[in-house]
Amino acid sequence: MQQIINFIIKNKNFLLFFLLFDIALLFTIQSHSYHKSKFINSANFLTGGIYNSINNINGYFNLKSQNQLLSEENRRLRSLITNSSNKVDSVFIDSLMFRASYRFFTANVIKNSYALSTNMLTLNKGVKDSIKQDFGVISSKGIVGIVDRTSNHFATVLSILNTTSKISAQLKKTNHFGTLTWNGKSPEFTQLIDIPKIAPVVAGDTIITSGRSSIFPKGVPIGVVEDFELDQAENYYEINVRLFNDMTNIEHVYVIENVNVQELNNLLLSNE
Amino acid sequence: MNNILSVHTVRFITLVIFQVLILNHINFMGYINPYIYILFIALFPIKNNRIILILLSFLLGITIDLFLDTGGIHAAASVFIAYARPVILKTSFGTIYEHQSIKFNTVDFGSKLTYFTLLTVVHHLILFSLEIFSISKILFIVQKTLFSSIFTILLSVVITIIFSRNSK
Image 1: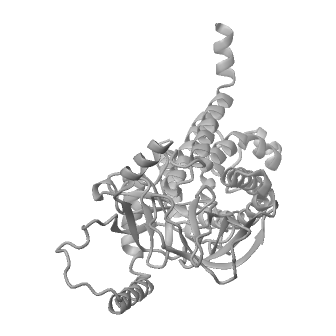
Image 2 (image 1 turned 30 degrees about the vertical axis):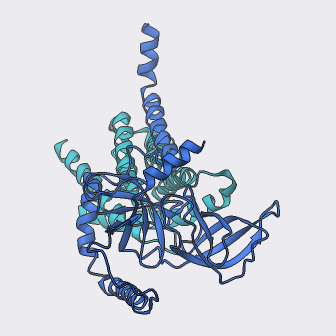
Image 3 (image 1 turned 60 degrees about the vertical axis):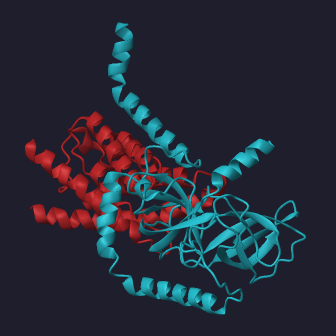
């Protein structure tokens, strides 16, 4: 017993180092797997609060570009309304809620990163604003990511610029679908893999979400095909996708809730 | 003692805030950021207890991780250099370290640069290995380590020069 205590006292520096290093490694490994980053995330009172107050100041500096983005979106939506062919003669009073399968929330990005290989964003909305895990996040131009952890007033978002992120996506003109991943290099490009060789891919094709997962509705724009090549087994294409979104400049985003997700999951589970 | 405590508390908070709110938004050439918060570990008084340094380094790293959503990579790298600091001190300062009488303001520039360089490179190598977490991307890890280290070393030398003049 005496010897054990002596050993501990003698090596206390190393033991402490070893313990703390292992704790840090544990957190690191957790953060590399989806939905496991339990303790260390910026959706808490302290970091969220600091980011929020700094964002209140920083927000003024890019008001102009953000206003431009929003007015561009308004223009697009307005032209959609005016040119839509199916005119309706009667509407429900709360037309947003009638059989809507998706609900939209607005939120502001208070922290963004794109230089790491596991990038996360922080939003200024949380559980009290009905934001929950696995809600999709898009901006006016395209896809941004998926809500990961939430606290009362903040939420972290697993960015599409994250090497662990996997999102189902497809070609706009045909229904060939694959998985959207990121190789950790440029924030302008993501990679679409597992597109079958038979698909007629051409540079410049539009890539959209496929709606196969319960997170994003079908048709959220992602980007255009920059270049593509066959993978090592020569069965599938690996496509470089140039994002519509400028991921380095995001302020206003929409959070999407799939209202039917429970029903959908139950159905899928009962099939198994 | 009280003075030293307050100096280091202020230094801790300032470096974290400076790192998180300013330096992490530099993104020079897309991904190069200096990680200047390790100055806290580098300039920690040598005579003090090693256990305190290791604990404080963990706290420092985990605070940075909290802000950046990076799991525990900064904590791991910081704890490692805090533990390895005596070895690095010995190789860069030689016999002066044996007598426990280093004042960071008075040592010559060359050995100070070696000291910062060793600390920074070790820290960044661990940091980026854990961040990218893939052996197949070893070249990318080395590349990131090299560029970010240059940036960090330059900035830390500049900062120490500025602040040591003020204190004289």
